Amino acid sequence: MVAFLLSSPFKDTSVPTVLMALAIMLLVGFLLTRLTKPLKLPNVTAYIFAGILLGPLAELILGGQPLFPSELRKGMEFITDLALAFIAFGVVRYFKFDILKKSGSKIIIITLFESLMAVAVSFGAMMLMNLIPGVSIDWELAILLAAIASATAPASTMMTIRQTGAKGDFVNTILQVVSLDNAIALILFSVAMAIITGKESGGINFMQLATPIFINIVLIVAGYLMGLLLYWVTPPKRTKDNRLIIAVAFMLGFSGVASLLDISPLLGVMAMGMAYTNIAPDESLFRQIDAFSPPILTLFFVLSGMRLQLHMLASIGVVGVVYFIVRIIGKYVGATLGSAVARSSENNKKYLGLALIPQAGVSLGLAALGSRILVSYGHPEYADMLTTIIVAAGVLYEIFGPPAAKYSLAITKSYTTEKTVEMIGPKPSEIPVSASPITVPVEESITEVKLDEK
Image 1 (cartoon, helix red, strand yellow):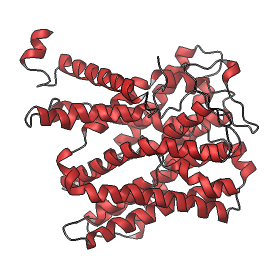
Image 2 (tube, rainbow, N blue to C red):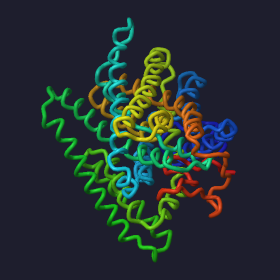
Image 3 (spheres, rainbow, N blue to C red):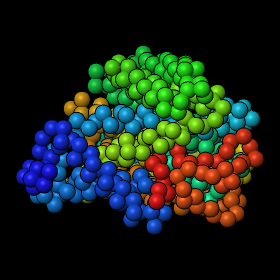
Image 4 (cartoon, rainbow, N blue to C red):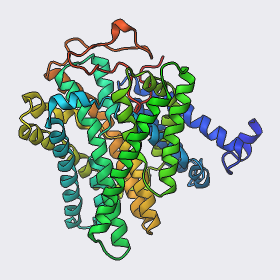
């Protein structure tokens, strides 16, 4: 092994090379969490930094030679699809129909406003950037950035909820909005890709715009039916191992068929999780997936960090900063306006937008999918810009998002005394119970690897 490492590490795609590369990615990701944990940053931040360290920084140190060649990283692309299946299934974990019925149309109105406002503000800002001398942003890149701007990462906000033991109506609104928010983001992203495809094919017509919407509706229906079937074939009498095996098989099978048809499976897998979480008597399956998925999600975030192009940071610096700022403005203003239109509480009007700042997970997956589309149409430079902007902005969102979310929880008096849970599994006495049917999560969402591992 020593001879292998000293002679020609990671210069082929053999089994030993792939295994060693995966091991290093996992270990470096874990070690960096030891640095981010004292700063109370999400583990996602550490994993992205690990990718930057092993990717562009290592290439810089090695004089332009990548530590992991492109062929090796290309062979790991399946990890992205695998991780996105877990993320999509778990992101709707707290989307409960009974709560949605009680809130009426309020949650839907708020989510539509904050999502669409982020899209509109981001697209407008990106196109206006072309007025700056030396800055050029193609409309294809702008529309993908705008669609991705609508997505919100629930993991960081849920980490803050978990640490503080927050509960109540404000917390329940956050959980519902974030779940529905990502479904809308996937639909908007599909429409954006359809617009790009139509333009590259010579023109855009109604059918080209309507087709992806129809396909997504079919995906939602199919995914929902699969979720019902999943519940039926995983009764409580089955062993935990068998339930996990069947659930993973359903997610991967659905994703595989959708990918075979050249369709993003994310919305369908989300519908599967939505169906399951609303009929299952408990969250035991989600907890099993939580315990199973961390290595896969770690590799996904490390790979995302490896896609960052350091040489592009200087040229897109202004663009990235503008995107970072205008998305926050869009989310905050949209949440405020949506809450006002829906006649929601004053807390939602003033502070809900602060809990919607983080963006990693679904956004990184959409950036990967968008990059593939741009490359397929001969725009690799735009693909690199898209990935670099989303990864760099994602790091900033994960740094500033948790403090903003904590402030919103504190100012709304959703908690009184901060309570950090240090264990992986909760003790019954330590689970904060909300007055409403949603129980605030002590365990982390599927979109986030366990936060307080010892």
